[in-house]
Length: 64
Image (cartoon, rainbow, N blue to C red; front, side, top):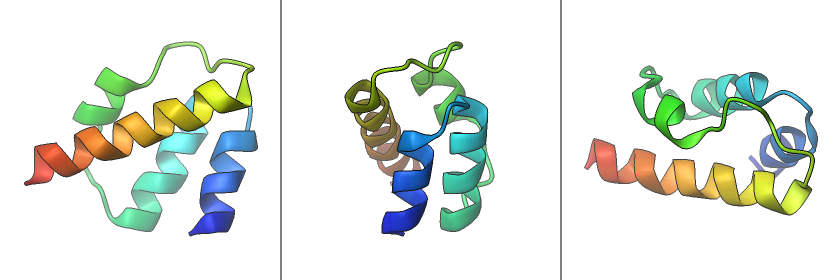
């Protein structure tokens, strides 16, 4: 999983990041990702990591 997270954080495409993580975790719905991810994938790596972390937290709350 670490390599996948690293790949998504370092990547330049937010949609691809969502796709990689959803596939790895078996998440089928795009509802939460659409809400959490910005339309433009930011250049700042730390911000990207925070966006992914917030999305995963929201996804867990949505599934619970």
